[in-house]
Amino acid sequence: MSFHDLDIGFAGNPLDRLSQAREDSRLLAGLAAAPDARAVAFVQSMPVLRLAGETLSSLHPLAAARAFGAIREEVLLGRDGNGPAFALLLPDDAAQAEESTDAGAFVDQRRLILPAFPALQIRDLRPLANKAALPRAEIALLAQAKAILHFHAHHPFCPRCGAPTHSAQGGWRRDCPACGARHFPRADPVAIMNVVDGDFCLLGRQKIFPEGMYSCLAGFVEGGETFEEAVRREVMEEAGIRVGAVRYVASQPWPFPASIMVGCEAQALSREIAIDRAELEDCRWFGRAEVLAMFEGRHQQGFFTPNPIAIAHTLLQHWLDEGRR
Ligand SMILES: [Zn+2]
View 1 (cartoon, helix red, strand yellow):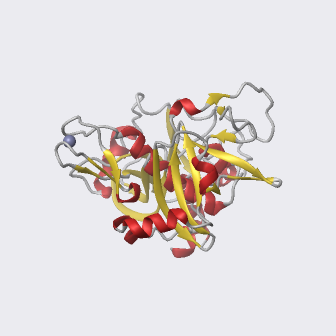
View 2: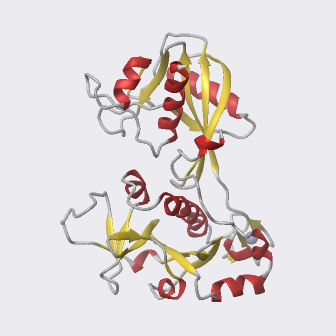
C-alpha cells in the first residue's frame, strides 16, 4: 500500500519531526535561531498566506512570522532540507474579516486579513487543499500545524484542576503547574467504510453535504471498541445493514479539527436499508458503473462522490480498481 499513501489528501508531510529536540532546550533554541528557520502562522484556525511570485505560500521566514502579532504559542513541527519549520498561533483578534467581495482566485466561506499586513491572505485549509492551491507537501505540513495548534487553542486550562497550563516539549505537551498534570495532543479516530456487496456499495448523504454528493458512511470510534466493531456499529446505526468482515485499506490525517480517518472496506451481510434520518438524509446501494459515472461527473441525476482530498474518494477508487482486475 505504500504507493497508495501518496494519493491521500493531507498525507506526505516531508518533515522529520525531530522528537529529540522536544526534550533538548538547547537544540530547540538552535533550530529557532537558524537563519533558514521558517514558520506557518494560524489565526482562527486558518493559515496566513503570502504571494511568492505568482504562487501562494504558507511558509514565512520565522522572524517575519513572529512579527505578525502577539504570538500565543510556538511549536516545533520539524525540519526538512529547506530548514526547520515552526507553527505559530496568533490570537483570534489579530485578524479581521476581509471586506473585499472580489472572488479573485478563491471563493471560500471565510476570508480574513491581518490589518497591518494587507498583502497577506488568510484562507481556510480545506478549500486550499480542494483546489490544490498549495504544493501537496505544504498541505500536509499545514495539517500537522493545524491539529497541534488546535490542541493549544483549546487547552489553556487544566482539565483536571482548572489552573492555567503552559506549553512544554517544543509545543507537544501542556503542563499544569498547579496539580502537575501533563496533557498531550490527541488525534480522534474516525472509522470510514466502504460497505460492499459484490458489485454494489453503500453510500449515504448528510443534509450538510453539497447537493448530489454521496459518500462512505463514517463515525467516531468510541472507548472500548475496535475499528472493526466501530465499523459494524456505525453501519448498523446509520443504515441498518449488518456487516461481517472488515478490512483496513488506508488512513488519512484529517485536521478538522484533529482526526485520523481509518479507511476500511466492509462486507455487507444484509441488503435492506433502514436509514437513521437523524444522521443521514439518504442512503442507497450504488453499482460499480454508477459509481464510476459519479467519479467522472457524468451521472444522469448529477450525483457525485467526494473529491480526491477525501479518503472516501480513495476507498471508492480502490474498490473500482479491484473490480477491474
Ligand atoms: Zn491541573
